[in-house]
Length: 156
Image 1 (spheres, rainbow, N blue to C red):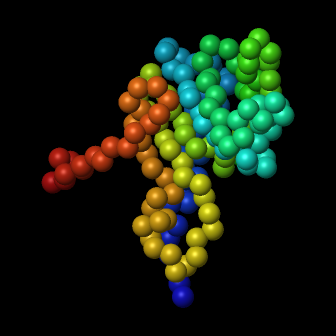
Image 2: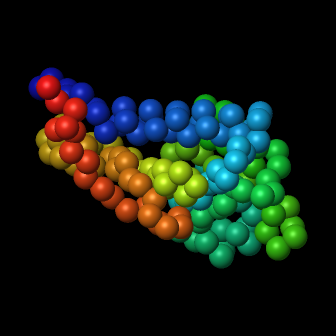
């Protein structure tokens, strides 16, 4: 049986690339204006590197804020390193892009929500593949909410 096009996986990788590009710009130029990020990630991912006490406190997922104080932001193809301040104690973290659950910049009401990637069987619905990535808009704070947008007004 012929394989279908994995649109969900392709969108997932494209959005990870977008986040990588944004973080690269911030690493080289700093955060412009009022921009800041809420990034939620899965702490159960085996490639996540965080202090043991953070993993104990956040056994499933954790949200970090990149805003006023951060250091050593380095991005590679698989994820990013950053040092953040937790109670006046700098802690280095490594967050793989595959562990990301949400990325929100509330200053411009932009947000992405990633669903967990799994190996899809060929027999599964295309609907499930489309659910791999939901693009969302931030309302208030770090919790994104979904919105359906009609493209009819741009059709000729």
